[in-house]
Image (cartoon, rainbow over all chains, first blue to last red):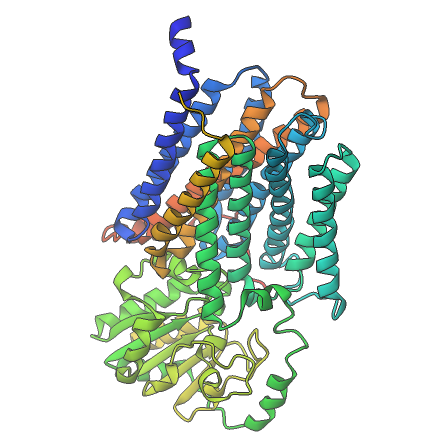
Length: 472
Length: 122
């Protein structure tokens, strides 16, 4: 028995288990390259996590098992029901919340490490540096994610909350203070006051960075915070000399960075500009001024007319946006398209990369409503198809369809890749009112003679069309 | 046994992991970006291990114990919640000819999750 125990606690055996664990993470993520292998991929990654967890428990030197059991019991009691019950439309805030707690764990672990070693008094400087990095980034990520959660859950207004001109200098001051405190500690200060000051500055920074960012920029923010938490986990791994943490954290960092870049590109805006925030607030004056050019000439339609138009189309493309998520209209949309398919209409869905509040948000909702995976088209595949489309049905999407992004160099969204809905033969837009979208810009599409507006809540409007269709 | 410097070894691992991450993640299609995000989210919950290691060391005072229990709870929420929710999402992406009715009844049950109810304004 003692022999077995000592073998299990051998450092190299532990390392082998960690290597197996991170190999499983990578293999699991490879599975995410397609919908058929993805479920298994996620489970493979979960098995890797279980192995890393067990390996760590085997190797632990001392007691306090009760504390571990308590922490895990609390975490399970909170995490499992949340994950089981969350609505698909609420997925962005769930991900933000899970991301936040990961960052929270990072900075709390760094803090306890600091306390346990009396301010890194006998630790190598590089370990202190990585631990401090984990503390700062973890704290920024924790608070930033919580603010993002609050905005998405509408506990905090989704519009940019900014300090105006002072915002940039406040952010840089907070960053500078946090870094200065970190440097002081790495240089040999053992004061816990400085450490806590650093955590507080990082916490304020997390708030100050995310509060000025508006709802539609959330896909970028969530990806960025995801990358941050990953990097702080990797830094914790170096501080604790734990390969599983290093590899896992770094892969998440890479994943978050890739997504952040993709999202920023899909909005034709630089990451610093998005983080600087304020877009879509009162600042977009040019867009508001441009609105004057298009007074009147909006054609509105009825559910009955829309139903006829759709029924006699041979090809219909659905363009979903955040409005579909807000109205929980995905099931109604699926019912409508099924009815149309039954009448021989060819259906596909064109999805802009930043539609919704997180990368891939629309795809999840449509998958929930059982829309076949091969009907979901990414922007680059969807755009050439609009020309041979009879009806584009725009449901709660706005800025991502605005031709101004292509045609109006003065528009704030000029240069942003859009879904070229205006190319199709006719367009039906379901929208609650003529209020401009997030960017505060009038959508030229609505004034196109080919466009008919159907005003109303996305879900009831779609259901009305389906009801009319059934009577045809 | 040759002892390489721990720092440089770990940095090498870090850099290689970064490159592998870029290659692997670049292959994930846009459609699966939400599950990717919540899956990688679950993976960074691995920071939990740090909590497990430190809580076992001697010299943890009462305050440290409190922080670490919170850290472990946070890490657990991150891991358990992340993997479960990703699994739920990915199940929906699988083609499922027979699941239509099951999905309908699931939605009909009117789950009222703590984080649900985003149907408010905007």
